[in-house]
Image (cartoon, rainbow, N blue to C red; front, side, top):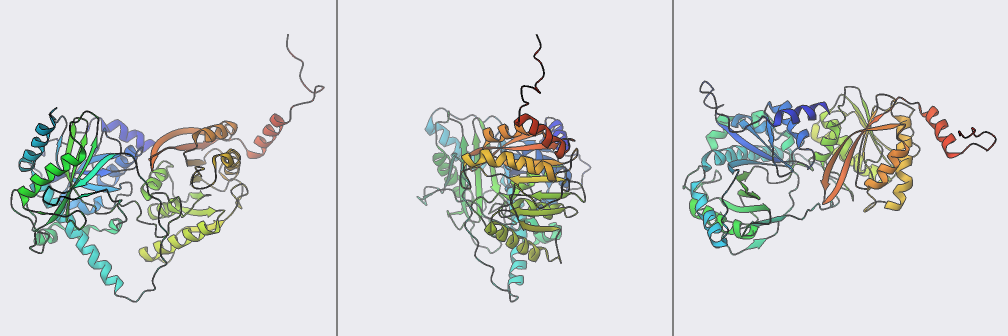
Length: 505
């Protein structure tokens, strides 16, 4: 709570266009603007993480789910260590008020002329440094795979998350090919180290340049590219497909690159939001949000969303954190990766879910190469947790929405029972709970009944696969569970007429 509020206070004063002092080191003065997509609703949380870990101030986009910050090229490796971002891109140029023409032909002609006028050099240099990082990571991974290992079990398909947006990925007219957007998968950028992207090593292999010269991917071959256009707004005379096609054709003419929709080296981003426009180059081929999960269930939570929920708790060393409906264990696994001084328990009433969580923990153990992690799993009934009263500091979980698991009818019994049992095991006065649900009506009713045990502190609204869900931060009141049970008993069993107090006149 405190870090989010602090970030909100400073963001209005941040400007990414501040001039660089003349006495700054030449290499450090080569700042680039990095953009990142984050779970909608957790923009301030992501901004707080950037400031904490990178020492950079952020600007939050008016278009929800994006943040921007400036960093030196030598700090690019640390950017991949951020836990709250899904995808990263470097900004070529940003237009706060682009003069889109009312005529479709005139508007598309502007896109054709724009490619040759953009300052590509610094963004392509950043892309090349980032590309060298990925090459070194692939080499390390290949070296590990050469050692004899048992093949891991096949992972179950994860649920697709989609929202209704105007998004197209189009190649220039020469290719005459259209394709729909492909969901980005997992990348191991979270394991990157600063040594992997030293400026000296990267610059030795650098071959991508700006201007009108063709650039190579380090092999002397012509680069392959595609253009991805995301558009929001209903007053444009063109479609995303039109903009990407014409802008992509101009990029191809400018660099003499080859268009390829699937096996591309460079992904050029064209983000249009009403009268604003941004041109960028993607730094992540695959989304970072599934970094810890190898065994998926029907409702696997994104790791980036789990991280945002964990940061809301203000975790302290030695805290005991419980996810009583863990599913595949995304929340406690993300927690143990970042807060190793706490102890996490992942539990569920489904044996299959507990097994998936245990498998994901084993995968994390192999990846981290440690003897053990402060995390454990258990199978239990949420209404009868095998935990001592007041033994838990934080409860954090993704509650059933009543869609893929359970039903909204069952939630009317499940939610009150959950809040009652959670209040028993959570420390009175200091305990916290962060609960995610889409069934808001049922949850608010259940919370009203348990208002003597839980106090709502904050609500974050998030978009999960097109569903508008709420993340509720609750604080455990100081009322003892035994006392509260007596109060509820009296409420549910009215006094007899002989015991009822006389009515006032």
